Length: 354
Image 1: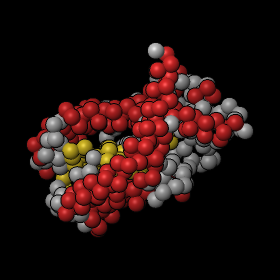
Image 2: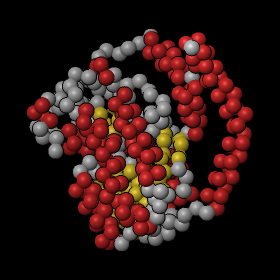
Image 3: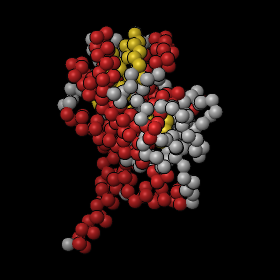
Image 4: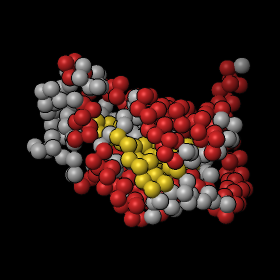
């Protein structure tokens, strides 16, 4: 029996790959036909109402501009109200019919309920809810010296999506609306130095996949997954006076190079209006899903080769500055104000997070 099980374990992956290879042309044809049909019947966003969380910069900002080009009414939500004013003015010039800005923290249910209720009271409906708030990191988990800020990742990446969705769902049912969520490829491509981030993104991915069946097609769900993309925040707009680096940065504020965030935003909005279940950028990242399912060891070997020659000195920062927080500073406020380090975060600071 053990021999048969071992033989099956060895044979199934190659056989599955062969079957998939022969089925690939048919799958591509079906997907192309579906794309053409959805494109011809794309949703007209003229005068529709769109709530965008995390709209103060990066992906959220660019998504606001894409909806503005389609003549939608926008509700821009973020903690940085001052930043939202400039974005609302630009969105209005581009073509948004009306723009409402609301300062709110999406990890708090009562604040989510407030901005949804304000939207309903003013517009009377919600057609699209776009969740873009996200927090990332780049460190090895074994190098962390203080775990008191770990809950921030789950709060922002998970509850920061769940709470707005939970509150808006009754109104999305009424309008047969759509939820758009900014996810990532980490659920099937577990990259080193991003373990907690990958875990939160996997939680979000599975939450919305399950929710898709619970809402029974009354509410559409578009899950946008991306690899490494660049942000306009890469130009150093949020650096503090002495240029200290931050261990944790909101994804839409990270100093990064990669694919154009504008292109990703355009694909998200176009896919949401077509009614696509998934938007992937770039699309060739799908190949990693095949490796994850049929040849997981290949990914393991690749990462071991990449990491075998060098392991950086222990640090919990994006760069090894090791600078402490300013005395009395709030991590939530520092995330909004600019990059700084959490490498020496103390329980005293933890108590003033909120």
